[in-house]
Amino acid sequence: VWPESSLPDLERYFKEMGTLIRSIGLLVAKKCDSYVSTHCKEYELGKMENIVAKSMCCKGRLLHYFPIDTDDVSNNNANIDSSFSSWCGWHNDHCSLTGLVPAMYIDADGNEIECPDSAAGLYCKSRKGDLIPVKIPTDCLAFQIGETTQIHTGGLLQATPHAVRGCNKHGVSRESFAVFMEPEYFGDMAIPNGKNIEDAQGKDSEMHLPSSVRTLRSRWKQGMNFGEFSNATFAAFY
Image 1 (cartoon, rainbow, N blue to C red):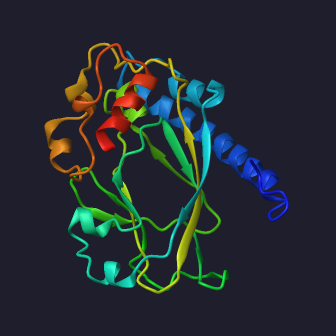
Image 2 (image 1 turned 90 degrees about the vertical axis):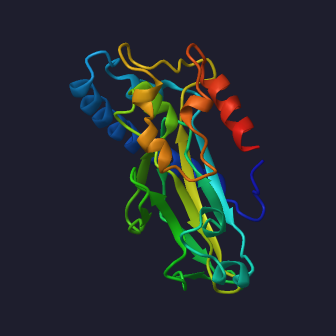
């Protein structure tokens, strides 16, 4: 599983970084729980923190974005969803919480470099549809809410559509590492009592979703578990 001969330290560093992201994620989850509980009395206090702390399904992934044809990027219109997301298409994470490290950029000779294209990298969309570049400082971690938490909080916390725009310089790749913190397969996907799917994602929010991001109402059903919600999400994209 691990390339011990060519990268003997990868396993150790991968696990150390994943453990660090999860430990900080616990602190983030605790703050999120506190905020939601003050605005929704029916919310199960500690729900998000318990998922991050106890689930055996947290997933760490190394993300490699291959160099792309620079013509594909230079001809892109940043206002067109399908063409803008040349390194990774627009989507919401469907987990509870995602932790992310700052990206590295590598040239064709394998050297780490500063990104030579100021327009490349991670972007998100606001609830009003505004396009926002995301620049993570080199000494920081970033966290974002996933759709499971959007359901669990009845929309008080919402997943953010995001995509990655490719670099317009030849031979440049992008490297990152993300940890997806989520319930186990049979974990519940219940909306708090007194709230419904319209609270979790209203029509106004749906209007500003990129075309590739499917609405929650098209995938979530009352009584389903996290595994079933995941399967419905994968089916909607693939």
